[in-house]
Image (cartoon, rainbow, N blue to C red; front, side, top):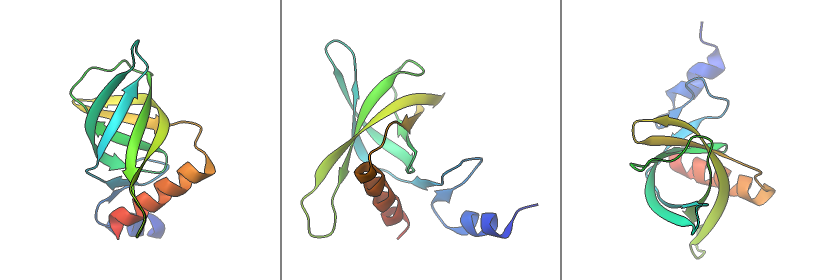
Length: 123
């Protein structure tokens, strides 16, 4: 049986809670992924969804499971210049062209940026 809080969560458009600790927000954002190859490999990709704990990326290239990456998301607050915020991440899921990355060792500032980005996606 679905709890009242769970029904309220699932009622918001663009937000998915399917068996997750944190909600995922539908997002189509251009990003950069830097893979720690020698030399480092930069991949341009798009997101499918975003949360404060991870990101789903549409990526046709093969990336090894559990591989580390640095992901750059462009962010701009009201009236401020756009900047790229970088996040360390680990590939934890693959399904077709979708790649699920978990953010690692987030700073307080990075958590705040992610929270603001997610809230802006449902506003």
